[in-house]
Length: 604
Image (tube, rainbow, N blue to C red; front, side, top):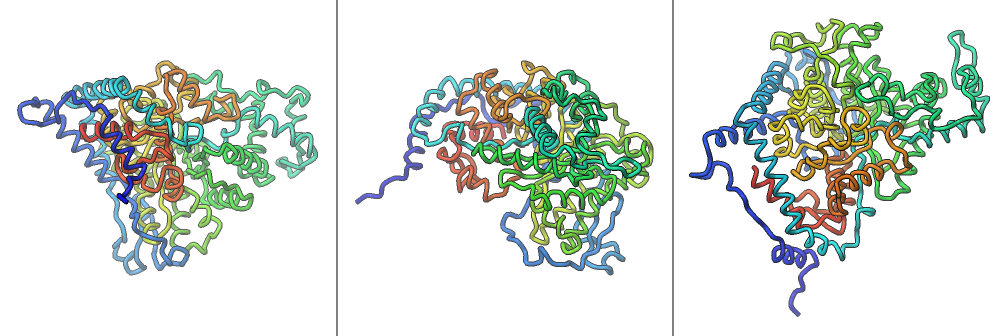
């Protein structure tokens, strides 16, 4: 009997026979077609892509977990000019011979300036703007010619959008519950344990939950979500109001009791609510999340408190990856006397991580917690006025940054990246998991933030300011930098929904996903991620295939392990193009994947 073709092979045959391909332009640089400006733009864009490649950490996927992962290493550690530096032993440290090296701050500054110079060069701006318009036009033509074919190709697919995995790629744990969830939880605790001691006075006297509400004159008989006052209805361009809405009933004491990991009750309430959120995500069946949780850099003991909270309360789910968010608020810590210079903040953030990587037995709880962490985020209001940075200013290392002003965004990005890079090289050497850098970027503020993140970030949260720079937007497309966009959050804070560039980015082929940011403030339903997808679908007429492509992007962008991604996307997901797509997992047709792949290759 002749060999029968597999279903996948038959679908490939159908694809080849029915997919309408069309070509509107010739590749850049083909003889007789490219202008001088086009050739120059191509050279500059390639230079920018090589600069990004220079900074990105590439994990060795062939390396298995080493037997030395949980053992003590003879390595020595010290900060050198703001960067954690590892030495093989004391003799190597005495000689200044480090195990790993990273690019220096002046080199980064020059490369960052070069990226911005490229993105704003006349030929690049013109070329990028034309190419972005072409990408959008080509997608719309593809939908017109192949939309029906995509629908027919998915008719016999056992999956649909509701049953494919969707990762909330950007969500903050302190606002991951909805207002109704938080209100119901508070009401339940007041009913079941009103006499529970939840705080202490400065003199050490007990404060019960009931007393706390009475002291704050909160009428427990009139609990409503409106009274809870967590909705972000007055926060447009007002980050101060936004931060205030993290306080239930407008009271910071209640935020401490219910939404903090470190308090009199050791974060018990927050842990219970977090596990309820995880239960909801798991019950949904086809959702996952990457929760952001804070390390501020005011004390190295923060890591002990955070890891103990996670491990002792068993705050865990297979459907969650932790990202550690570091607020860019050195100026606040300096003003209130919690930091004398920027190096102190960096040391508090990174030294415990280097120490526990070298010797896991020095802090077993932190060692276990770090296995569940996939990356670092950097957060704060990007629209704040920044100190200008010249090359001379970059020569001021973090120990000497003792001024009251906050370092600029790019300064933060470099020292975050340099320490994560050095730490990753050490952890890879020991066979431990490594960390991505995925900062908040391009939500507001200067577009040059997106230039510095282009060099060092695996992906960014928001990125909507790319609409203001054709050069950077095209570079983000060519490099397929992940963008975790949150249109409902943007609508309340910085950009009205009908002006959001998400759909434009999607049509052009940028690597976009949808995320919720802060359900407590921006969402009404008990399924915030589906709410995000549903509204986007209605506003931009996205069909099931479109939503499934966005969901597939979310899994690829995420920090979940290779094993989870194989389970959610198919065993061959790492292969390029159609070979890596399995419609039985993703609900994305091979027709769509081949179109995206061919178009990107044509642009490259």
